[in-house]
Image (cartoon, rainbow, N blue to C red; front, side):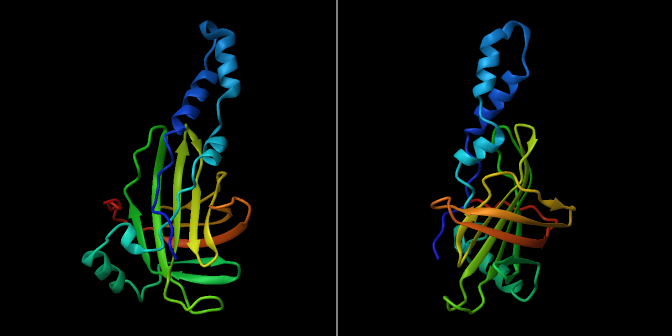
Amino acid sequence: MSTGTLRPVAAVVALAASGLLLAGCSGDAGEAAASDASTSPTPAEVASETAVPEPSADPADDAGAGDAGEAETEASADTVRGTAVVAGVEYELHDVRRCEPTDVDQVDRELELTARGVMPEGEGHDGGDWVQIDVYVQQIAGMDFDQVSWAGPEGVFGTNDATEVTYSGERVSGTAAMVDGLTQTETLTVAYDIEVPDEIIDCRP
């Protein structure tokens, strides 16, 4: 299964921030500011116009590629650090990484979590491939806008609108309604519960 690598929210977020600032102005700005604010995108519109961060199901595409990453994955293969339930199928997640948050203008990202598991043998596939879920706890232009994405035998899916992520500091959990990353017409619901490592690592080459 081939998917894209992790991508941060695009710089178009800056347009939303500009619109929100204009919306808060008064006095000298006059009718021009009101007109600009009325046509400025909201965080939801920004997210819908921006590609949902697509997870990479191949661990070599992301953090820890090479011998060190492979050794870490093998060492944690027997430890279940979380689960994801998709279409009635429960996937065990073994490789969980807390990434250093991406530095994007007007995006305040508190948590960037990537969790992978090996796909069990089942109908329609032989097993052994990776599944991956990415969880983002963040604010866009000062507004809560958590997002979740999924890559598995069902395809690549993500949340266009904000979703609620329960983050305790030690675990993240929730249920996210997603749309497919290709046509934006298929829907999928993913329920997840994942532990959050203390260590923050650089997940980008």
